[in-house]
Amino acid sequence: MGIFLGVLIALVVLIVIGLAASARVIQQYERGLVLRFGRVLDRQRQPGLAFIVPMIDRLWKVNMQIITLPIPAQDGITRDNVTVRVDAVVYYRVFDPVLAAINVQDYPHAISQVAQTSLRSIIGKSDLDDLLSNREKLNQGLELMIDSPALEWGIHIDRVEIKDVALPEAMKRSMSRQAEAERERRARVISADGELQASYKLSQAAEQMAHTPAALQLRLLETIVEVAAEKNSTLVLPFPVELLRFLEHNSGGSALVAAVGAVAKGGNAGEPGGGTGRDATMVGPVAGGAAGKAASADGSGAGDAVAADAPKADAPKGDTPKADAPKGDDGDDGATAIPAAHLST
Image (cartoon, rainbow, N blue to C red; front, side, top):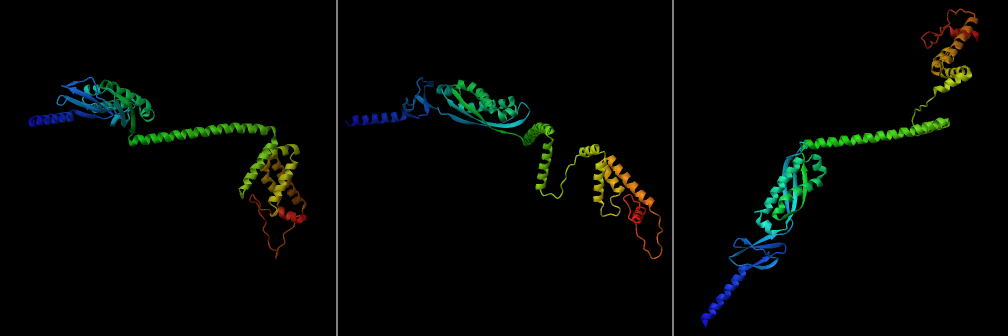
């Protein structure tokens, strides 16, 4: 009885040990493959508790999650001969555990090598502008290049993203200068377009003012008001020469001569002999050639007549002091004209 009880206890212990050795736990994100004498069984082990034959079967767990694989930065030369350094990231998952376990020895390492090779190939086939601005198309092409061999391994490439494109410092400076020149070109084009539109508007305004001359005068007054608002000490008023020509035509030169004479008298009122023909000759060329000559002729003739009608008088000698005669603008003294004026008075 004691021997039978000992054998029974030994069998129970062996069964417990066998169950403990054959029991396996598979996680929810895993699938189990059983290799019996080196052959893969068709039935995959689902998540939960799974049993295998101890010392005969071997359980292989395959992760079914999406795996993130960073691609190391790759140096390459683009199609337009620019040296760049590009890195990327690959997202993939296993859809067939049998193919992933049997057809490739180490599928994460295999995917990493294929991704690096494909990335260098994409760099050589692309331009720098595509790497910087058209990354979506490059990502799709890179995904197709990696996914083609991965399908035979039971792996699906979910997506591929280019993370960063490192450029040499000289290339960065060149691109910044190019961008600055482009912005300056756009600014000049916009400014020139504005000037063109403004010229159209100004031409329309000039055409409108030509029909109504008073509008030009009103515009001149508005300009004077704007200038006066700045509290400037000097105010420049444009005086049209056509107005002088109009006066010369309609009055035959007499009104213009009178106006020029008045200006000459007002300008030299404090000088002896002010308002003579010399002053009119100085102002005459500004107002108009003919009027100035007429005023000069009238003034010089009057001076000569006074000088001729007056009798000659000897200058007194002795204690009488000599008075200096004022000199004219041309450097000659006015001795002849001034005594004649005194004698006539």
